[in-house]
Length: 312
Image (cartoon, rainbow, N blue to C red):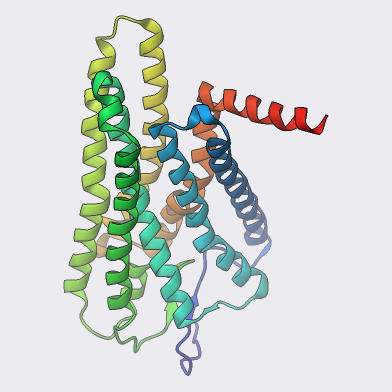
């Protein structure tokens, strides 16, 4: 193993890519994905704000998902790219703490928000007459604030504990961001109790929302099969399949990483899985929600038409 200077409190991020031609090619691909994710999510957020027809609970929640994804990918990729291009793998103690806080907050918030979106579709399809009451603006605001608040509290607790642990071994984190399980391997104290708490948090913020989403969409699919209108069935299937695509891409690698015993995990596998939920998913979300949604495509035409008419 390489020897790193231990005279500083800085950590070392070993990174995802090797410093060679293949690594440089993959870095350019990641930068392209990052730019696409930023443009897609910022564009989706702006589109929902600009088009009055999208001022509904479903799209209000979707705008928050786009905002979370924009912040999410910006938490890890710029530092990874900067370290690769500069050749310096250092991240300051404070910088690592800030990155950990935002990463955990956004990861947990997105899990809760996806569950809120599943509940929204459940009420809209299974209880359409109650939808205006159950999913009004106040309810949407409560779901969004609840997601941010609970996730921030959880993240703050984990961040404070993680960064008061004594690290007396190598400070080289075998990851491309400050991942808590990867950092626990560097601690010079027994952390099994805290690792159990990380597992409990993963169950609360990943497994429980996923189970809620599964139940919601199970009820939705049951209701869809009994619809008489073919157009209604088609629209419901399109919406549900879109949401389920996002859920599977996000939850599957995340749950596989954080719900396994550390004895069954490997740093290289964890880094590859992290690419899915921290880099690819933020890019895919706006693509999936725009290309497979007629209302969003219609909003694009209206907004672009509005701007082009102003230019004339």
